[in-house]
Amino acid sequence: MAHGILDQTRHTSPEQLLARAVLAQAVIDLFSVSIACSTHDEAITARRDALAFLADSDGPWAESRRAHCLLADQDPDRVRSSVVAILNGAGLSDDHGYRLKGIEIARELWAKERERQKTYFDNAREKVRVRRERRWAEKLRAQDRQNKDRRLAESRTMEPDLWRGLDRRPVTHAELVDDLAAFIDIEL
Image (cartoon, rainbow, N blue to C red; front, top):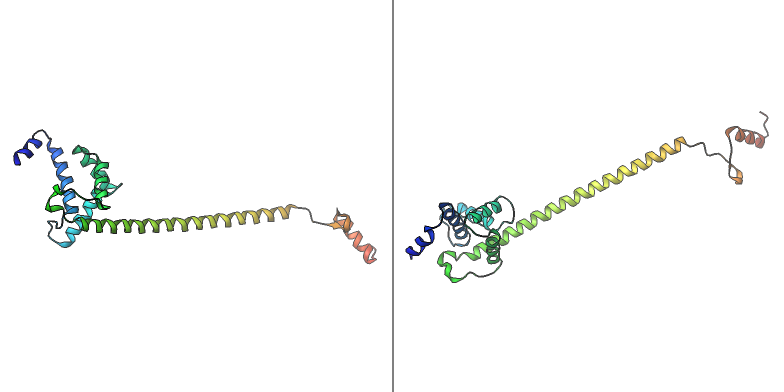
């Protein structure tokens, strides 16, 4: 058995071996029942880090996975899709041995992470919606102010609205005073 591993590694660069070891350790940290850590909190952190490393679609963990996969001569998208498929319910083949029996733990963590992300994005969408509504309301108020100012400016520049009788002919101020004086029977 050891001879076969040595044959596989003989023509492999140290960087490639290290990248493969990092990927393998992430899989072990995510899918094993127990993780070799000094405290329970460290084990939880290691499992979450492994989940982020293997399943994140963007961000620093995804970039790190891409770099390690390229060094290990693996397709990073294929690695992620395989891990996500297992997390979503696909089974593992039996050749992975006893160490990867913590699939249910990983699936629970995956479900919690997806729920956390859903809540985060729902909150972010709500904040964006509120900001948009506030911005639209401010625009409407600004437009109303502009319209009111425009109407006020127009009304100030217009001639006085002096109309005589039903003929709707505009009159001057002097004509109006003369008509009123004649109506009251006053001589000016």
